[in-house]
Image (cartoon, rainbow, N blue to C red; front, side):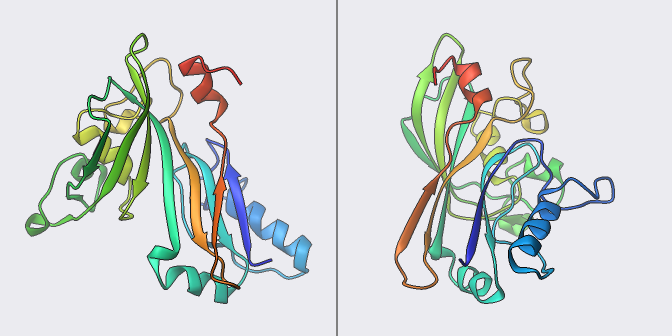
Length: 213
């Protein structure tokens, strides 16, 4: 009624750009809502994902719901799964490394707030280690929402996301960065109850880790 929850495929652009004006998720949402309501309205995305990141995206169907979700970040918790290069030694860790806020070159480096960096906090826990592949499947929770935060943080702690060419994870086995927004927990705008939604592990994750369906 108030929300549209989408499990985005990888390689799909969310917003139109100067290079990509059609076949975007935003175009699809506008068309879908027009069919449902008979009205043309802007797509009110609560969260955004990079083109090559798969997983859950929340769209508010009206301005009130959008304002409700944005009024308190505690109303939405975002969880990700990723495959990283190397065997992560720690079972879990809290990563609190400030990162640059402008330009991918800066985000690849730890940068103190005094030097223009942004505070960033990511929780990571190991789901399974794959020694034969030298890979680790991890789960992450965002506590801040910096651009490329997970990608930068995992690179800075020495375990870049597999396939992430920008942050040192390039690998012949992966055609994209193996990052997936798999779970959202948010507050219902009508009754205040917690709702949890999950998206299954993508097929390319399973193929690389040799996980059967």
